[in-house]
Image (cartoon, rainbow, N blue to C red):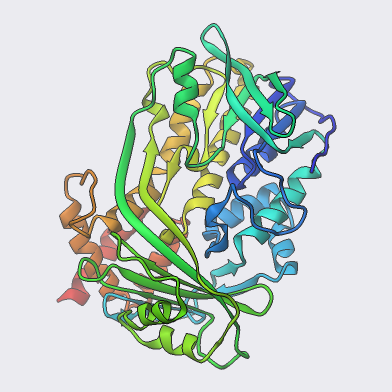
Length: 452
Protein backbone atom coordinates (compact mmCIF):
# COMPACT_ATOMS: atom_id res chain seq x y z
CA UNK A 1 0.00 0.00 0.00
CA UNK A 2 1.62 3.25 -1.10
CA UNK A 3 0.32 6.71 -1.83
CA UNK A 4 2.34 9.78 -2.42
CA UNK A 5 1.84 13.44 -3.06
CA UNK A 6 3.02 16.88 -2.12
CA UNK A 7 1.57 18.70 0.85
CA UNK A 8 1.00 22.43 1.21
CA UNK A 9 1.59 25.03 3.88
CA UNK A 10 4.75 23.26 5.03
CA UNK A 11 6.95 25.16 7.47
CA UNK A 12 9.72 22.99 8.92
CA UNK A 13 11.41 21.06 6.14
CA UNK A 14 11.19 19.12 2.93
CA UNK A 15 11.04 15.57 4.28
CA UNK A 16 10.28 13.67 7.50
CA UNK A 17 10.49 9.93 8.08
CA UNK A 18 8.42 7.71 10.38
CA UNK A 19 9.71 4.26 11.31
CA UNK A 20 6.89 1.79 12.05
CA UNK A 21 3.34 1.62 10.73
CA UNK A 22 1.30 0.68 13.78
CA UNK A 23 -0.94 3.11 15.65
CA UNK A 24 1.84 5.38 16.99
CA UNK A 25 3.53 5.55 13.58
CA UNK A 26 0.28 6.30 11.78
CA UNK A 27 -0.52 9.06 14.25
CA UNK A 28 2.98 10.49 13.82
CA UNK A 29 2.68 10.45 10.01
CA UNK A 30 -0.63 12.33 10.26
CA UNK A 31 0.91 15.03 12.47
CA UNK A 32 4.09 15.37 10.41
CA UNK A 33 2.02 15.81 7.26
CA UNK A 34 1.00 19.24 8.61
CA UNK A 35 4.60 20.38 9.09
CA UNK A 36 6.68 18.90 6.23
CA UNK A 37 6.40 18.86 2.45
CA UNK A 38 6.70 15.08 2.34
CA UNK A 39 6.42 12.26 4.87
CA UNK A 40 7.61 8.69 4.31
CA UNK A 41 6.53 5.88 6.63
CA UNK A 42 8.58 2.66 6.54
CA UNK A 43 7.36 -0.69 7.90
CA UNK A 44 8.81 -4.21 7.79
CA UNK A 45 5.49 -5.90 7.08
CA UNK A 46 3.22 -6.13 4.09
CA UNK A 47 0.43 -3.93 5.39
CA UNK A 48 -2.91 -5.60 4.68
CA UNK A 49 -5.50 -3.80 2.58
CA UNK A 50 -8.18 -5.15 4.92
CA UNK A 51 -8.31 -5.69 8.69
CA UNK A 52 -6.15 -8.81 8.71
CA UNK A 53 -3.66 -9.37 11.50
CA UNK A 54 0.07 -9.12 10.84
CA UNK A 55 3.34 -10.30 12.33
CA UNK A 56 4.41 -6.83 13.47
CA UNK A 57 1.43 -6.59 15.84
CA UNK A 58 1.54 -9.94 17.72
CA UNK A 59 -0.91 -8.66 20.35
CA UNK A 60 -3.44 -7.72 17.65
CA UNK A 61 -5.65 -10.77 18.24
CA UNK A 62 -6.42 -9.68 21.79
CA UNK A 63 -8.73 -7.10 23.34
CA UNK A 64 -7.95 -3.45 22.53
CA UNK A 65 -9.79 -0.24 23.14
CA UNK A 66 -9.05 3.44 22.99
CA UNK A 67 -9.29 5.15 26.32
CA UNK A 68 -11.72 8.01 25.77
CA UNK A 69 -8.97 10.64 25.74
CA UNK A 70 -7.16 8.79 22.97
CA UNK A 71 -10.25 8.46 20.80
CA UNK A 72 -10.96 12.18 21.16
CA UNK A 73 -7.40 13.10 20.16
CA UNK A 74 -7.56 10.77 17.15
CA UNK A 75 -10.94 12.18 16.12
CA UNK A 76 -9.31 15.63 15.97
CA UNK A 77 -6.68 14.36 13.53
CA UNK A 78 -9.12 12.26 11.54
CA UNK A 79 -12.58 13.87 11.60
CA UNK A 80 -15.25 11.20 11.34
CA UNK A 81 -12.96 8.47 12.70
CA UNK A 82 -15.41 7.37 15.40
CA UNK A 83 -18.18 7.10 12.82
CA UNK A 84 -15.83 5.14 10.57
CA UNK A 85 -15.17 2.69 13.39
CA UNK A 86 -18.94 2.33 13.87
CA UNK A 87 -19.30 1.47 10.18
CA UNK A 88 -16.73 -1.27 10.72
CA UNK A 89 -18.97 -2.74 13.41
CA UNK A 90 -17.73 -1.05 16.58
CA UNK A 91 -20.07 -1.33 19.56
CA UNK A 92 -20.69 1.62 21.87
CA UNK A 93 -20.59 0.84 25.60
CA UNK A 94 -21.64 3.42 28.19
CA UNK A 95 -19.41 3.31 31.24
CA UNK A 96 -21.71 2.54 34.13
CA UNK A 97 -24.89 0.77 32.95
CA UNK A 98 -23.24 -1.22 30.13
CA UNK A 99 -19.87 -1.79 31.81
CA UNK A 100 -19.99 -4.26 34.71
CA UNK A 101 -16.78 -4.27 36.74
CA UNK A 102 -16.09 -6.66 39.65
CA UNK A 103 -13.06 -5.64 41.70
CA UNK A 104 -12.03 -5.85 45.37
CA UNK A 105 -14.84 -8.24 46.10
CA UNK A 106 -17.78 -6.26 44.69
CA UNK A 107 -19.38 -4.57 41.69
CA UNK A 108 -18.76 -0.93 40.95
CA UNK A 109 -21.86 1.25 41.02
CA UNK A 110 -23.58 1.45 37.65
CA UNK A 111 -24.99 4.98 37.42
CA UNK A 112 -25.04 6.42 33.85
CA UNK A 113 -21.82 8.32 33.16
CA UNK A 114 -22.40 9.85 29.73
CA UNK A 115 -19.03 8.38 28.68
CA UNK A 116 -19.13 5.87 25.83
CA UNK A 117 -16.37 3.36 25.11
CA UNK A 118 -15.82 2.07 21.56
CA UNK A 119 -15.29 -1.69 21.33
CA UNK A 120 -13.66 -3.05 18.17
CA UNK A 121 -10.79 -5.41 17.38
CA UNK A 122 -7.29 -3.96 16.97
CA UNK A 123 -6.91 -4.88 13.26
CA UNK A 124 -10.10 -2.96 12.42
CA UNK A 125 -8.95 0.11 14.36
CA UNK A 126 -5.55 0.07 12.70
CA UNK A 127 -7.05 -0.50 9.24
CA UNK A 128 -9.38 2.49 9.59
CA UNK A 129 -6.54 4.78 10.69
CA UNK A 130 -4.19 3.43 8.00
CA UNK A 131 -6.71 4.10 5.20
CA UNK A 132 -6.99 7.69 6.35
CA UNK A 133 -3.22 8.20 6.58
CA UNK A 134 -2.64 6.59 3.17
CA UNK A 135 -5.12 9.05 1.67
CA UNK A 136 -3.05 12.06 2.76
CA UNK A 137 -1.55 13.61 -0.41
CA UNK A 138 1.94 14.15 1.01
CA UNK A 139 2.35 10.83 2.87
CA UNK A 140 3.95 7.76 1.29
CA UNK A 141 3.77 4.35 3.00
CA UNK A 142 6.61 1.97 2.08
CA UNK A 143 6.21 -1.69 3.04
CA UNK A 144 8.66 -4.59 3.36
CA UNK A 145 11.46 -2.29 4.47
CA UNK A 146 13.67 -2.67 7.53
CA UNK A 147 15.71 0.03 9.20
CA UNK A 148 19.46 -0.58 9.38
CA UNK A 149 20.48 2.53 11.28
CA UNK A 150 20.57 6.30 11.44
CA UNK A 151 22.48 8.69 9.18
CA UNK A 152 24.36 11.29 11.22
CA UNK A 153 25.74 14.67 10.16
CA UNK A 154 27.80 16.08 12.99
CA UNK A 155 25.64 16.12 16.13
CA UNK A 156 22.31 15.61 14.41
CA UNK A 157 20.40 12.81 12.71
CA UNK A 158 19.95 13.56 9.03
CA UNK A 159 18.15 10.43 7.85
CA UNK A 160 18.03 6.63 7.97
CA UNK A 161 19.54 3.67 6.21
CA UNK A 162 16.93 1.15 5.06
CA UNK A 163 16.87 -2.15 3.20
CA UNK A 164 14.09 -3.45 0.97
CA UNK A 165 13.33 -6.96 2.26
CA UNK A 166 12.38 -8.42 -1.13
CA UNK A 167 15.52 -7.67 -3.16
CA UNK A 168 17.89 -6.58 -0.38
CA UNK A 169 18.51 -3.17 -1.90
CA UNK A 170 19.90 -0.65 0.62
CA UNK A 171 19.33 3.08 0.57
CA UNK A 172 20.19 6.16 2.64
CA UNK A 173 17.10 8.35 2.99
CA UNK A 174 17.61 11.99 3.98
CA UNK A 175 15.17 13.57 6.44
CA UNK A 176 14.91 16.72 8.52
CA UNK A 177 13.26 14.64 11.27
CA UNK A 178 13.16 10.91 12.00
CA UNK A 179 10.45 9.58 14.33
CA UNK A 180 10.96 6.12 15.82
CA UNK A 181 7.59 4.40 16.28
CA UNK A 182 8.84 0.82 15.85
CA UNK A 183 7.32 -0.40 19.11
CA UNK A 184 8.63 -2.24 22.10
CA UNK A 185 11.28 -4.04 20.04
CA UNK A 186 12.79 -0.76 18.82
CA UNK A 187 16.48 -0.79 18.02
CA UNK A 188 16.71 2.93 18.75
CA UNK A 189 19.26 2.53 21.57
CA UNK A 190 21.53 0.49 19.30
CA UNK A 191 21.11 2.95 16.41
CA UNK A 192 22.12 5.84 18.66
CA UNK A 193 25.08 3.92 20.03
CA UNK A 194 26.28 3.24 16.47
CA UNK A 195 26.52 6.99 15.77
CA UNK A 196 28.45 7.68 18.97
CA UNK A 197 25.65 8.52 21.44
CA UNK A 198 24.92 6.97 24.82
CA UNK A 199 22.12 4.45 25.25
CA UNK A 200 19.08 5.80 27.12
CA UNK A 201 18.63 4.56 30.71
CA UNK A 202 15.69 2.20 31.21
CA UNK A 203 13.07 1.46 33.87
CA UNK A 204 11.41 -1.95 34.05
CA UNK A 205 8.69 -3.56 36.15
CA UNK A 206 8.60 -7.31 35.54
CA UNK A 207 5.08 -8.79 35.51
CA UNK A 208 5.26 -11.93 33.28
CA UNK A 209 1.69 -11.56 31.99
CA UNK A 210 0.06 -14.29 29.90
CA UNK A 211 -3.08 -13.86 27.75
CA UNK A 212 -5.45 -16.36 26.17
CA UNK A 213 -8.23 -14.97 23.96
CA UNK A 214 -11.20 -16.64 22.30
CA UNK A 215 -14.13 -15.39 20.25
CA UNK A 216 -17.74 -16.39 20.91
CA UNK A 217 -20.99 -15.68 19.14
CA UNK A 218 -22.62 -12.80 20.92
CA UNK A 219 -26.04 -13.75 22.33
CA UNK A 220 -29.13 -11.63 21.54
CA UNK A 221 -29.46 -8.29 23.30
CA UNK A 222 -31.00 -8.63 26.72
CA UNK A 223 -29.59 -12.09 27.35
CA UNK A 224 -27.17 -10.61 29.91
CA UNK A 225 -27.56 -7.26 31.72
CA UNK A 226 -24.27 -5.80 30.46
CA UNK A 227 -22.24 -5.24 27.31
CA UNK A 228 -18.76 -5.46 28.86
CA UNK A 229 -17.92 -7.66 31.84
CA UNK A 230 -14.65 -7.19 33.71
CA UNK A 231 -13.79 -9.50 36.63
CA UNK A 232 -10.56 -8.83 38.51
CA UNK A 233 -9.02 -10.73 41.40
CA UNK A 234 -7.89 -8.77 44.43
CA UNK A 235 -4.13 -8.33 44.64
CA UNK A 236 -1.96 -9.69 46.07
CA UNK A 237 -4.02 -12.83 46.71
CA UNK A 238 -5.21 -13.29 43.13
CA UNK A 239 -3.25 -12.84 39.90
CA UNK A 240 -6.14 -13.50 37.51
CA UNK A 241 -8.71 -11.49 35.58
CA UNK A 242 -11.12 -11.86 32.70
CA UNK A 243 -12.85 -9.57 30.20
CA UNK A 244 -15.77 -10.12 27.84
CA UNK A 245 -16.58 -7.35 25.34
CA UNK A 246 -18.65 -6.98 22.16
CA UNK A 247 -16.84 -6.52 18.85
CA UNK A 248 -17.72 -6.44 15.16
CA UNK A 249 -19.35 -9.41 13.46
CA UNK A 250 -21.83 -10.11 16.26
CA UNK A 251 -19.05 -11.55 18.41
CA UNK A 252 -17.76 -11.46 21.95
CA UNK A 253 -14.03 -11.25 22.52
CA UNK A 254 -13.19 -13.09 25.76
CA UNK A 255 -9.80 -12.54 27.33
CA UNK A 256 -8.30 -14.37 30.30
CA UNK A 257 -5.13 -13.01 31.90
CA UNK A 258 -2.71 -14.19 34.55
CA UNK A 259 0.27 -12.39 36.09
CA UNK A 260 3.60 -13.70 37.35
CA UNK A 261 3.54 -16.90 35.31
CA UNK A 262 0.00 -17.88 36.35
CA UNK A 263 -1.08 -18.01 32.72
CA UNK A 264 -4.37 -19.34 31.32
CA UNK A 265 -4.10 -22.60 29.34
CA UNK A 266 -4.79 -22.62 25.61
CA UNK A 267 -6.85 -25.86 25.51
CA UNK A 268 -10.62 -25.39 25.73
CA UNK A 269 -11.11 -27.34 28.95
CA UNK A 270 -8.22 -25.65 30.76
CA UNK A 271 -9.28 -22.24 29.48
CA UNK A 272 -12.79 -22.65 30.90
CA UNK A 273 -11.42 -23.99 34.18
CA UNK A 274 -9.31 -20.82 34.45
CA UNK A 275 -12.45 -18.73 33.83
CA UNK A 276 -14.21 -20.67 36.61
CA UNK A 277 -11.38 -19.78 38.99
CA UNK A 278 -12.10 -16.03 38.81
CA UNK A 279 -13.49 -14.49 41.99
CA UNK A 280 -17.00 -14.12 40.55
CA UNK A 281 -18.78 -16.79 38.45
CA UNK A 282 -20.72 -14.44 36.14
CA UNK A 283 -18.08 -14.33 33.40
CA UNK A 284 -17.62 -18.11 33.25
CA UNK A 285 -21.40 -18.68 33.34
CA UNK A 286 -21.94 -16.32 30.41
CA UNK A 287 -19.23 -17.99 28.33
CA UNK A 288 -20.43 -21.50 29.17
CA UNK A 289 -23.81 -20.56 27.66
CA UNK A 290 -22.31 -18.95 24.54
CA UNK A 291 -21.21 -20.59 21.29
CA UNK A 292 -17.41 -20.65 20.90
CA UNK A 293 -16.12 -19.59 17.47
CA UNK A 294 -12.35 -20.03 17.92
CA UNK A 295 -9.80 -21.79 20.05
CA UNK A 296 -7.57 -19.69 22.31
CA UNK A 297 -4.81 -17.45 20.94
CA UNK A 298 -2.03 -16.73 23.45
CA UNK A 299 0.34 -13.85 24.07
CA UNK A 300 2.98 -13.11 26.71
CA UNK A 301 4.25 -9.78 28.00
CA UNK A 302 7.33 -9.80 30.24
CA UNK A 303 7.55 -6.29 31.72
CA UNK A 304 6.61 -2.65 31.67
CA UNK A 305 9.51 -0.94 29.91
CA UNK A 306 10.37 2.75 29.76
CA UNK A 307 13.33 4.07 27.78
CA UNK A 308 14.34 7.43 29.19
CA UNK A 309 15.48 9.25 26.06
CA UNK A 310 14.60 12.47 27.89
CA UNK A 311 17.48 11.81 30.31
CA UNK A 312 20.13 11.44 27.61
CA UNK A 313 22.74 14.22 27.77
CA UNK A 314 23.55 13.77 24.09
CA UNK A 315 20.22 13.04 22.36
CA UNK A 316 20.88 14.29 18.82
CA UNK A 317 18.61 16.72 17.03
CA UNK A 318 16.56 15.25 14.20
CA UNK A 319 15.43 12.18 16.17
CA UNK A 320 12.31 11.67 18.34
CA UNK A 321 10.78 8.52 19.85
CA UNK A 322 7.05 7.90 20.42
CA UNK A 323 4.67 5.09 21.40
CA UNK A 324 5.83 1.74 22.77
CA UNK A 325 9.36 2.45 21.51
CA UNK A 326 9.47 5.01 24.30
CA UNK A 327 7.16 3.53 26.95
CA UNK A 328 5.47 0.12 26.91
CA UNK A 329 2.82 -0.72 29.53
CA UNK A 330 1.26 -3.96 30.76
CA UNK A 331 -1.45 -4.20 28.08
CA UNK A 332 -4.19 -5.35 30.46
CA UNK A 333 -4.74 -1.68 31.39
CA UNK A 334 -5.59 -0.64 27.83
CA UNK A 335 -3.35 2.44 27.83
CA UNK A 336 -1.08 1.82 24.84
CA UNK A 337 -2.96 3.50 21.98
CA UNK A 338 -3.98 6.47 24.10
CA UNK A 339 -0.49 6.93 25.54
CA UNK A 340 0.80 6.92 21.95
CA UNK A 341 -1.77 9.57 21.01
CA UNK A 342 -0.74 11.76 23.95
CA UNK A 343 2.94 11.51 22.99
CA UNK A 344 2.25 12.35 19.35
CA UNK A 345 0.02 15.23 20.45
CA UNK A 346 3.01 16.60 22.40
CA UNK A 347 5.13 16.21 19.24
CA UNK A 348 2.52 18.15 17.27
CA UNK A 349 2.56 21.00 19.79
CA UNK A 350 6.36 21.12 19.69
CA UNK A 351 6.39 21.26 15.88
CA UNK A 352 3.83 24.08 15.86
CA UNK A 353 5.86 25.98 18.44
CA UNK A 354 9.07 25.50 16.44
CA UNK A 355 7.38 26.81 13.30
CA UNK A 356 5.85 29.80 15.07
CA UNK A 357 9.13 30.75 16.75
CA UNK A 358 11.07 30.77 13.50
CA UNK A 359 13.88 28.71 15.04
CA UNK A 360 12.99 25.61 13.06
CA UNK A 361 14.34 22.28 14.27
CA UNK A 362 17.51 23.63 15.87
CA UNK A 363 17.56 22.38 19.47
CA UNK A 364 14.25 20.61 18.89
CA UNK A 365 14.69 16.98 19.94
CA UNK A 366 15.72 17.17 23.63
CA UNK A 367 12.88 19.42 24.89
CA UNK A 368 10.38 17.61 22.68
CA UNK A 369 11.42 14.24 24.08
CA UNK A 370 10.99 15.61 27.60
CA UNK A 371 7.48 16.77 26.70
CA UNK A 372 6.64 13.36 25.22
CA UNK A 373 8.00 11.63 28.32
CA UNK A 374 5.86 13.75 30.64
CA UNK A 375 2.69 12.57 28.88
CA UNK A 376 3.43 9.00 30.02
CA UNK A 377 3.96 9.79 33.70
CA UNK A 378 0.36 9.36 34.84
CA UNK A 379 -0.28 6.15 32.92
CA UNK A 380 3.04 4.68 34.12
CA UNK A 381 2.24 5.50 37.74
CA UNK A 382 -1.26 3.98 37.55
CA UNK A 383 -0.29 0.80 35.72
CA UNK A 384 2.93 -0.02 37.55
CA UNK A 385 1.41 0.94 40.89
CA UNK A 386 -1.40 -1.55 40.42
CA UNK A 387 1.03 -4.33 39.48
CA UNK A 388 3.37 -3.49 42.35
CA UNK A 389 0.62 -4.58 44.75
CA UNK A 390 2.05 -8.04 44.12
CA UNK A 391 5.20 -8.37 46.26
CA UNK A 392 6.71 -10.79 43.73
CA UNK A 393 6.69 -8.14 40.98
CA UNK A 394 10.26 -6.93 40.46
CA UNK A 395 10.67 -3.20 40.01
CA UNK A 396 11.47 0.03 41.79
CA UNK A 397 8.81 0.97 44.32
CA UNK A 398 8.69 4.74 44.71
CA UNK A 399 8.53 6.18 48.20
CA UNK A 400 4.96 6.01 49.51
CA UNK A 401 3.86 3.15 47.24
CA UNK A 402 2.42 1.14 50.14
CA UNK A 403 0.45 4.13 51.40
CA UNK A 404 -0.91 4.96 47.94
CA UNK A 405 -1.92 1.34 47.35
CA UNK A 406 -3.71 1.19 50.70
CA UNK A 407 -5.61 4.35 49.81
CA UNK A 408 -6.45 3.01 46.33
CA UNK A 409 -7.81 -0.20 47.85
CA UNK A 410 -10.14 1.87 50.02
CA UNK A 411 -11.17 3.93 47.02
CA UNK A 412 -11.89 0.83 44.91
CA UNK A 413 -14.12 -0.58 47.65
CA UNK A 414 -15.86 2.77 48.07
CA UNK A 415 -16.74 2.85 44.35
CA UNK A 416 -19.00 -0.13 45.01
CA UNK A 417 -21.31 2.21 46.98
CA UNK A 418 -20.56 5.69 45.69
CA UNK A 419 -21.39 6.54 42.03
CA UNK A 420 -19.59 9.88 42.31
CA UNK A 421 -16.31 8.13 43.11
CA UNK A 422 -16.88 5.68 40.26
CA UNK A 423 -17.33 8.61 37.88
CA UNK A 424 -14.00 10.12 38.97
CA UNK A 425 -12.30 6.73 38.59
CA UNK A 426 -13.64 6.30 35.05
CA UNK A 427 -12.32 9.73 34.07
CA UNK A 428 -8.87 8.90 35.40
CA UNK A 429 -8.78 5.42 33.84
CA UNK A 430 -9.73 6.97 30.49
CA UNK A 431 -7.11 9.73 30.89
CA UNK A 432 -9.68 12.52 30.90
CA UNK A 433 -8.33 13.51 34.32
CA UNK A 434 -4.91 13.17 35.94
CA UNK A 435 -4.37 10.45 38.59
CA UNK A 436 -4.06 13.24 41.15
CA UNK A 437 -7.84 13.72 40.80
CA UNK A 438 -8.21 10.57 42.91
CA UNK A 439 -6.36 12.35 45.71
CA UNK A 440 -8.38 15.56 45.59
CA UNK A 441 -9.51 16.52 49.11
CA UNK A 442 -13.20 16.15 48.22
CA UNK A 443 -12.56 12.68 46.78
CA UNK A 444 -10.34 11.63 49.69
CA UNK A 445 -13.00 12.77 52.15
CA UNK A 446 -15.60 10.53 50.50
CA UNK A 447 -13.18 7.60 50.49
CA UNK A 448 -12.40 8.00 54.16
CA UNK A 449 -16.07 8.47 55.05
CA UNK A 450 -16.96 5.18 53.33
CA UNK A 451 -14.04 3.50 55.07
CA UNK A 452 -15.32 4.57 58.48
